[in-house]
Length: 496
Ligand SMILES: [Zn+2]
Ligand SMILES: [Zn+2]
Ligand SMILES: [Zn+2]
Image (cartoon, rainbow, N blue to C red; front, top):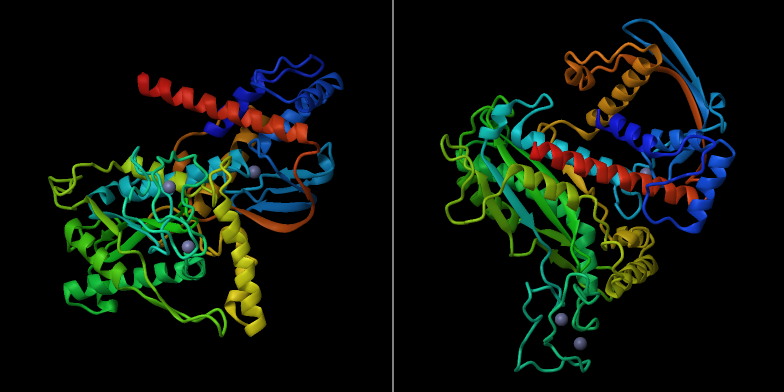
């Protein structure tokens, strides 16, 4: 319901057709202001603002031309929709980009969905039983190993204050007495690029998704071994479920943050045979034992054995024993379910570099991806590393930014389908004037079977983005306004 309310709020703050905009959108550039004023003069402001609201104030909506016919299998009603019905002759759909620096509006939807799917796996809801909160739960962070000394933020302390440090063979001091802030471009940069093993770092990143995959297999085996059963026997007494997000660190390598839950034989919420402390130990053991043998880039390179960094953090969030819900007596900081879900959702929308801070070493790693790709191609044009160039913008990381096991919780796909269904029901109710039937609404929105069947559909891609820079800016300003409103509303709700 939030989307509709927010869109309504933002449109109500937009000037009506024919009036000069009195935009409450903060600072706008001249071109954005001109666009808004021109639209208002020609009476097209309302139409534009409506189409922008419909794509959730996306920064780069896709423009499509075509038509589709659907039939409701329940009522048999047939509906046709064609882009020729819209004033522009095409329809816009949100770009769906997960990155906040690419599209603030879509990345927020992605973050909210990710938050929901992580939260429901922690606390239940959205058809996940609430007893899931009684299952043992571990929060693990898997890092990359070190590939050389880098500058870092040390909580107000100096970076690498060594007084007996020598210069490296390239003449660079192996110490740094500066105190770096997180917005310092040096953070994550090697003390000496030549000494830093960037080839190994990129080869590690290339194989990181495989390391993670093997870690999940190793963990299932470790749990089975602990319980004295085989892998297939494990399914009869417990299942390992997880939600994982990848987060780019300042040095340009990913960390994996994972919530790992042990369910009993009957799925989420059924009692598990071991507790959270044992599970944390099994996670540590399994993750640190995982290895991937990586072939060399070319004849001048060496084969590598890749592992996760030894700085593995695996904390018990919930023991799963009645009476002590959140506690690991060895750590004082409590992990709260809502906070964890919030952090993870935020990580999943981060780019290789937080927007606004140029980090020269990341650009250098991007170029290094191309160098290695060309070397691999020269040695063997079928080498998998040839594709490193294609993935250079991701610094060689090919994995997904958020993944989860099948039975962890609700899926992104179902959340998206639910949103589409809600939009359809809301539009129907707006058209007919009949208020939305809220009885069992969530259950109907999340229902597995789609009652609307697509009979025929043919769409062609016309282009992407708004018509002018001014329109993009207006959409983003409105999106920011909507976010601010959502924040105020939740503050009011919390206060009340
Ligand atoms: Zn977008
Ligand atoms: Zn430093
Ligand atoms: Zn050096």
